[in-house]
Length: 232
Image (cartoon, rainbow, N blue to C red):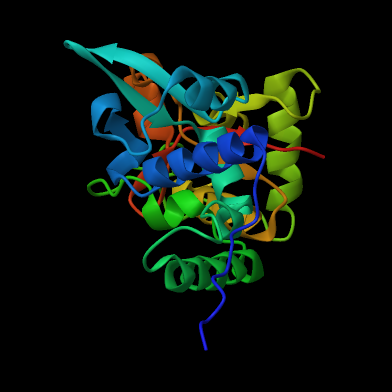
């Protein structure tokens, strides 16, 4: 008796386009530093696939040499991390079912432990830069750890003019906490990110990064973060 073939459900052009956008973002996230030459990416980053992601601020395209490169932005890393388990289509050919299961497990792990995707797949650079703002001398005392997050929030608001959802450069933040040792401030900022009360980002435009930004950066998994962002 012949076995009846299984027919895949027909999907709309909009659904297929969204699928290709997810695949493009996933392909970029899997590249070192989240960046790749446009000609090397599959699916091909045609304008209809690429531009919606650019409008969302998830990727950016830049001219390099004779071709273009496409790079994931900080916003794209966060968006990819939040939707990691849905970026690979369910009916993709080959070993997609296994890979999808792995990505779902990874997504659950990251959510449970509040780990950012860029901490796992982002750039892994060299040794941390020297800390800024450390107080020299045995007489210097750091504030109690429980008080420091509140002081960091106050310093953030001082830098941003009292606004939330605005970037504050760490090079501007550290002078507001001159009595806090650099190592202590770094550890507290990392703890705030792990708790979800703050976010640390790198500056997207490398040409914008100054030596002061590099010196003030907080290192997470070998990646320098130059910006503090508090939403509420």
